[in-house]
Image 1 (cartoon, helix red, strand yellow):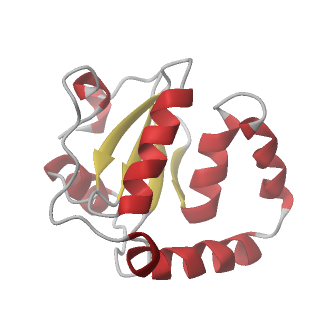
Image 2: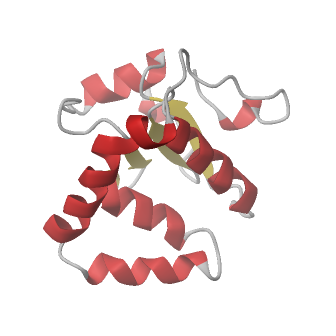
Length: 139
């Protein structure tokens, strides 16, 4: 499964029904000038296989996961900050927050994640990428 994943790419797994997550994915796509990221919804077949492969407890991690072929899996605030670090100036400056202890970063992240449906809403089904973006998504 992941052995076929390109070594020069990173995979962002996201909550496909979350409006905040979908907006964030669109934001990443617009700023991914190096074409580094690919995407899949946690609810997709591929997303479910990764969750199973890495024994990810979706009751504790249900929003963003970053898979790097050589560095493995990153979760929550660490994943978000590692993504931001690859998006160029000024977003890459956010990587400085990786110096903040994980438990503090994740407390803020979890607060937002817990309220994301209430604040931003939820879709009935996962986003369907446009034909021009289809090659950035794995089903």
